Image (cartoon, rainbow, N blue to C red):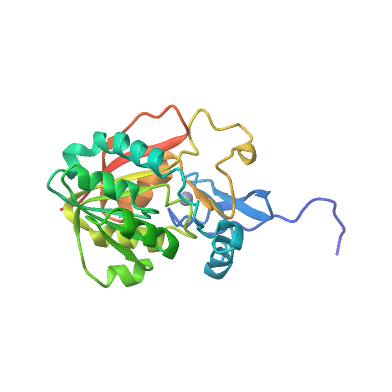
Length: 252
Ligand SMILES: [Zn+2]
């Protein structure tokens, strides 16, 4: 076999968003390899961390909620109230779900604006806090598949800074499509890999943060993904920071 100093060509893999066989290794960070799709620009951990790896990471003692975990509760509550105001027309007298609700601050704020508000999160500590502090809301501590089996649908679904954390888009997207009423609205925020504030050398971007952030979208990859699950963009907010802030409508 002839020797060569060139690296062997790396076979591209299927993109989890657009399904084209066009994703190739881009860089490694913190021991995780990222690939980027040449067709849609999707940037993702390849392979994704397993559910067990993520569970071990999020449940390590230093990350377990303690008495002072929500010690900034007053300012969180105030910030949630302010943030919720721009959603007033979407939540007033509506059924609302915050998916990935953490300590329930946004659900609590939506309830104060007249919503029938619920929250879903996988963290026991967060849901225990939410139930105690926002008793007007309904909270669920379960995984997506278990929650889908309840067959509850909402007028407005809110998902802030969750999509980048989950190991692959499909379980969350299946859930978003299942819990949003046909014709209903969904708000999503997630880092924006196509934003002008992202460093040219993407590996330097602070939102490339495995194992917490394992997938990052530009506008094209985000739109392809949501279209595949029956959503179209209703409104995209301008953002000075590299983050998508989008309202989608589920096809009726
Ligand atoms: Zn792609």
